[in-house]
Image (spheres, rainbow, N blue to C red):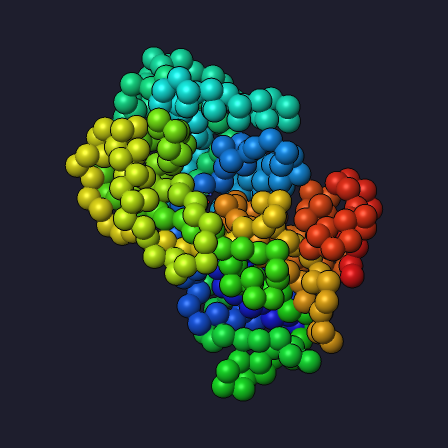
Amino acid sequence: MRAAVIGAGVVGLACAEELARAGHEVRVFDPDPGAGATRAAAGMLAPAGEAWHGEADLLRLGVASARLWPQYAARLGAASGVDVDLRTAGTLLVGQDHDDLRQVRRSLEVLAAEGLRFQELGPREARAQEPTLSRVAGAALLPDDHNVNPRKVVRALLQLLGDRLVAARAAVDAAGVVTADGTRFDCDAVVVATGAEARTAVPQVRPVRGETIRLRAGDPPSRVLRARVHGQPVYVVPRAGGEVVVGASEEEHDAEPVAGLGTVVRLLHAARTLVPGLETAGVLEITARHRPGTPDNGPLIGPRAHSGPVREVLAVGHYRGGVLLAPVTAQAVRAHVEGSDVPAVARPFVPSRFTHPQHVTPTGQGRALTT
Ligand code: GLY
C-alpha cells in the first residue's frame, strides 16, 4: 500500500516507521520534525505514575505500550545506531508532606485495582533508595515506569525513515496529500498525526500547555521522581550526561505556547525543594508546547468518521502520553491502515467513541469498527 503520514512528532514518526517496516510505501510530511510537543516531552514511560481513577482503559493501553518499549528501544538503537537512553531504574512517586502523601496513596489505589506492582516506602526508605531527596513524608517505588530521551527517539526514527521524510506541510486532497508547492503523493491512506494542531480538523482535540526545563546537575537523581510538593505537581527526570528535565505544568488555553514565568518559578521551586542538590544545577533550556488533550484524556486512534475520498486514520490526542504510547499506536495504526486485527487494548480509542459510542467494541472482543 501507499501511505502518507502528516506530522513527524514521535507518534507520526513511529507510525511511519512501522508502516515502512511492514513493506508499505510511506512518506511523512512535516516542515520541522520533532519540534512540537515531542520537543518538550520528558520521555517518561509512566502508565502507573500517571494512572488516575476512571481511566482504566488508558492505563491498560499505557501498560501495553510500556511493555513494548524495551524491545522497541533496542531495535531502534540497533537499526539506527542511535542509543535512545532507555533507563529502567523505575520511578519514585513522592509525597513531600502528609497531604501530598495522601494524594500519592490515591494513585496507588488505582494501581492496586489493576494488579500493578508498587512498593510503599517510609521517609527513611525513600531516602535510602534515592539519597538526593530532601526530607519527604513518604513515597512509592513504581518499578515498571521507565524513561527514554524523546529527542534521541526522534533522531533514531528519522534515521530509519531516511528520504521518506518530506520537510513540508501537507494537506489531504482527493487522491492523497499535496504540499504548498504542489508536490503530490497519491496514496491509499493518510495518517493524521499532527498533535495539538489537529484541533482545526478534529474538534475533540484541545491544546493544554506544558513547560519543561532542562537542567545540568552535578548530582542528579538516579531515577525518575514524580512528586507533589506542598500541593504542586512536579517531575524530575534524569537523562544521560547529568541532564535533568523538570516539568508537569498544565494550562488550559489557546494562547501561544510560550513558557509562563510564574509557572517556571513554581516548577523550579518545587524541584529544588524535592532535590536540594539542584540548587547548583545549570539551566540549559526552557520549552513550552501544547499537549493534545481530549475529553477523556485518551488518544484518538483509528478511522476518521468523515473522511473524504482518501481514507484518513487518526493518531492524535495523546495528551500526556505521546512518547509512552508511540509503539502501541504505531501497531494499531498499521492494523487500521491494513484492515487487520487491531490490538484489543487500542480498540476503545477509536475516534467514533465520541460520535457513535454504541459501536465501539469493548477491549478483548472482535475487530475495531471502521467507519
Ligand atoms: N507525561 C508528562 C507530561 O505530559 O507532562
